Length: 297
Image 1 (tube, helix red, strand yellow):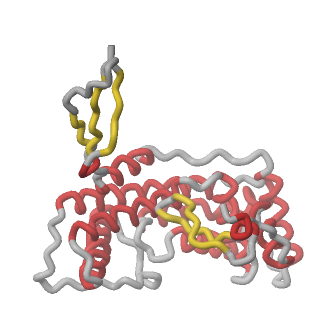
Image 2 (spheres, helix red, strand yellow):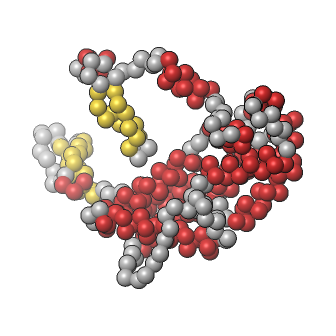
Image 3 (cartoon, rainbow, N blue to C red):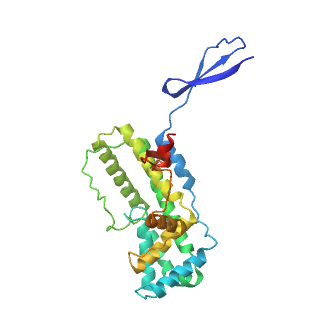
């Protein structure tokens, strides 16, 4: 009769060995755990968004939307009705908030979205429907996933040569969206090469660059893909408020609570500075004299 024990060997190998009743140790058997492939990890994560459906609205979304739209129409200093012109500004602002550098949406997407304009004022003011915003967001997630999948394929090949005469404009907010998927892929490839070259010039090795860019695009996918319905609603109604003026915003409950805390200085925490590390919350440092520091734990 024996039982198995294990310990971590060199290079991440798990070394298993058995011990009999008298404590005799059998020859160890090494099972090597392969390190995580950052590109494959990116592909695996992105595959969750291969099929994207619009998020379901919250139970109070219609009332919130109607109230916000009517307040802006009746109480904002502009006193502007939510007409076709304002609806165009509303739609434009929403697209800009989702894709400010014009790299994900296609021009064909934008033309399709403009078909919503005639009914946008009525469904917003009178019905409180947000299906237009949710369908646009679903299309945006689809385009982000397509970009991440395409980038992962380029990173997997690792064929980055800089011997030609390429040109790329990183600031694209005043440039048009790509016409179609083929034009988008050309743009996505140029953007990735720009990012890769920047890291090489920062003295990173090719292996470090692949790992860093894979993590970066995974964060991009996660930051949008994990938004809840109320967070998408906040973006949508903020776009509506911005259509009236750039200093008007919509705050959902969570954002309003955070705003109140920052204004009233009423937050009492543990006294720790936190940071995001690839989707995980980690403690950066402790605030001197705070509860965490005083506990000495």
